[in-house]
Length: 468
Image 1: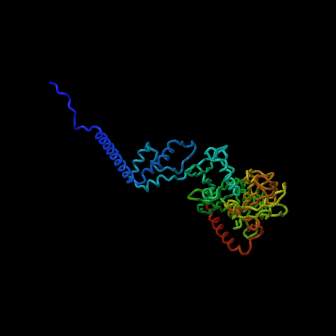
Image 2: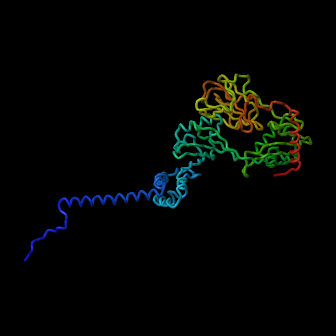
Image 3: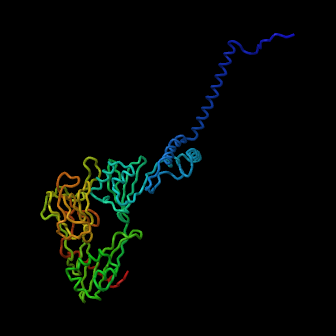
């Protein structure tokens, strides 16, 4: 006998069923919410970890995605060792952070300046180099504006190196160029915009030594055999050519001694050898020349052997339109903007004279300085002439005091025709209108004691005849 199905009375029906469903849903959401709160608390225990991942991931991505320029030589990598390199993934980097202190991780994530070097090759220009590394033309103009009072960036020399330093946004904050082992110049971004000139100097160690030789044939060949350079042979000839004839008076067996000074930085020579003393015996007659502290040569009695410098680079005196001022500041930006020379209100076409004997070391055309000439005068002096309309000499040419070397003009960035004239002593600009320059014909009495002491030192070196 089949019994009819019985209703399961223990199952809720009607209102009881709905009440049970509501309770179940409430319990479910309560459990889920409690779990999320525990996760948040665990995350808080790790402190800055989520922030560190946010900071590190873009850096690691930048390393992977941005290729290095082919000729760029990285000197100071901005990425800490191991991040994004050596096959380590971003996830592995983040996991490693869990076992390190938050302070260390923050330090690692701070970007360092990027430093690169560019070696100058034939055909390079500053504009092309700036374009190659993505620097805007406005940055180049700002650098050149700062360089117009120093003119050390141009012209470029093959083999020289330019060093660029950028911030994390790729902006140029410093450009530097090594002049010699003792001196590196740099243009550094200023707080108010633009760039300012800086020098980085290393101490120079100086040494003195003498070279001895005997005349066998011409003086030039004899001096070369003794180890003298072409430049120093020319200096010696210029010093004593008014005393005797190097071609006719010298005889085989005549002797000569030369004291030279050479500087070095950590064993690397700085510049070329400098002549300090000369002694030549011609048919038994002794001729001598000694360098004084003013940069001129004198005989043993203190009489001048080299022509004095002119105070003015023109035949007549012109009005000074802008004076020498190394501490001048830009009237708008407040940045240092020195005026390293004296501006003379010369009309266009005025004859410009060399203020002293010397060798032309540079003739160039600069977008700010215009056509200009650099002359290395005897001793520690050098001169510079800017904004010329026509240059009448060539690089390497020897010039005499008072020789016409150019015509004045208004080239470069100027408001009118004038001559910008600079005088440098030991490579540093001085006021050409007030500086103590060698204009006297003999050494003053107050300087004779120091001069005679130097003569004694040099004579001792020459008598020793150390042939190097």
